[in-house]
Length: 293
Length: 191
Image 1 (cartoon, each protein chain N blue to C red):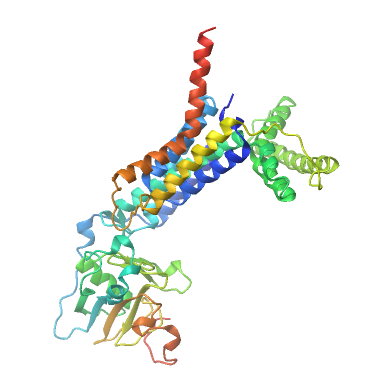
Image 2: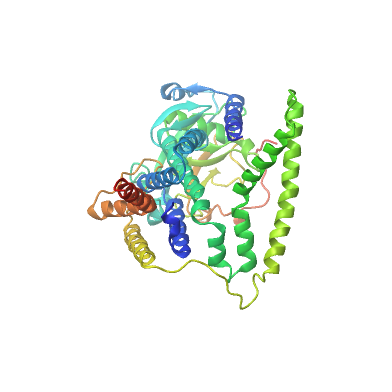
């Protein structure tokens, strides 16, 4: 049971947009640490622990890869550690590379949770009336990769039972995979045509078409929306005061530590951790109630 | 599948690093370049690096660079200094030798990495291109004229005065606007 996805889709969409905007437009370490923490925590609450650990390990190596490539290309910075091919490798470049890769990994984790929270029917509900064709294409594109992953598992499993990967040679294994991929491609094209035909038959995009949906606006949705707007207003006012500015070249500027700045950082952290806190509250409540039975 | 991709990228990184060569020098080693002593019969040129236009456009400068440590009060990063001109030295070679000797930070983009076939000076003394507005950068002139060529393509001769000047307005504020340069000059270029 995921509590966060039961909110109204418009609020979920606004929240996701704001998370991405806040993470991508600053390089402040606290903001990006909050993004990473929020993304990883939400992912851990939505998926089994084994998958979380596997993903964390993989993205740790991605983090190292990107962190290493930045100093190789950027040579600005005060503290020079050593010279590689007549170009200085500076501490600032290494730190900036690390921070940028934290931003990247954080946003990747948020996007991994996206498919579970903003499913394609919610997206269609939000944008189907305004831009039917574009929203159809967008929702089909967004569900493409997980759908392909599921389908390739099915095809591959069936073929394995029928004896496709039985020979020992590498070339045969490769040819077997190519056959599976080929079958996946033709299935996906047919699937797209089927979906489009079905939607056309039901009159999707026609004027005056109403559709049934379970998305009513409840009191909790109002409270969440108010909370999001208040936090955004506080963060915007902090931004206007330059609280989220941070520079790396040629020297690393320190963080502001005035009262307003600390308020801004706390608001940002709370904003990023909002869905995770909601999920944790629900889990605690559920366990508490269950233990009373 | 994901592991394979990751391995592939690490392998790519490794090959790039190995092919690019791994000449690692510590900070002291790098700065130990030898600038030839000026003797009686050696060919010399004078080199200077200035950034006066930055002082005129101080508000447009990056916040972090608004410090006398990065932008000297009189705008002189390197006063006019005589250096020995070795045969086949381009302006770029002289700049590299001078900045190494005086321990001034300098970052450049190699000749093979851009369309013009010449080294491009990204920044000197932490003042980079675009640090003072979107039309700012480094230009150089020899004997008061702008060669309109990359600095690794111009070969100076004995007695030349080379100046590296920072512009905040595409060269218009230092007389180096490319539309105002004279057409024909007998100049000393490499191919």
